[in-house]
Length: 258
Image (cartoon, rainbow, N blue to C red; front, side, top):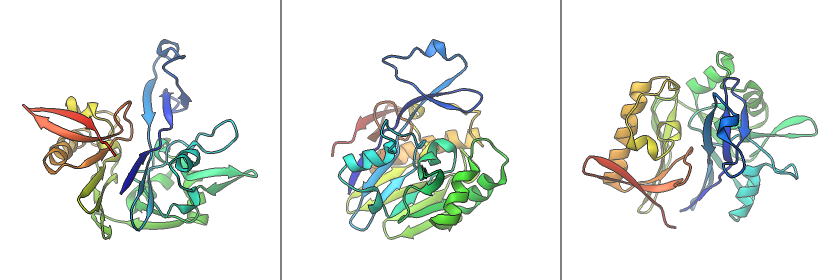
C-alpha cells in the first residue's frame, strides 16, 4: 500500500464561510479578524486493487487552471483518470470542493471513472439546503454524471475496506479503515482531523455532537496506539500521516515513514 498526502495548503475562513488562501510566511493572521485557520490535506492510497482518494479538498486551481488535487496526484506518479474510488467522510465544502471542476462553463466530475462512496443520510442532508456548509451544485453534478455508491450504517465496502457511521462531526459522518497485509490505515475525517485534537480534550461547537466527537477522538486514538494504525490527519498542519503513541496518559504522534 502506498500513501500520499495531497496537501492543498492553508486557508482562513470567516463567518461568511469563504475560504481564502493563507500563507503563514507572507500573510498576517491579524489582518483577518474573526477567522479560523485550517489546513487541507486530501489523501491518495494505492492498493493492489484500487487507486483511492479520501476526501477531495476545496477544489482550488493553480495558475494554469489545473486542480491542485489533480496536480498532486500526477506528482505522486498517477493520472487522475486512474482513480477508482473516492471515499468521503462527509460532504462539507472543504472536503468536497475538488469533486468537480469547471470546463467550458459547466461543472464536471473530477474523477469520472471513480465510484464515490457516501453515507445516504449525509447525501440527503447535503441536498436539503439546510446548511451553507454544503454546496448543492457539486452534488447535483455528481448525481447527473458520476458513479455513486450509497452506504448506510457501518460495514464492509469490499475486502480490505471498512466504513463506520460515527456521527460526531456531522450526523452522518463516517470513518474508514483500509487494510492490506500488515498495514492498517485509518481515516477519521473531521473526527480525528489533526494530532493536536488528541492532545487536548474538548467538545467543539462546530461538531453536530461535540461530546460524542470528543469521546470518539479518544477512542480512535487509543485503538490506533494499541493496534499500530497508520492515521491520516486531514486538517494537520505538520504531521499528516502518522502513528499514535499513548504513554503516561498522554498521546504523541510520530510521522509515518514510507
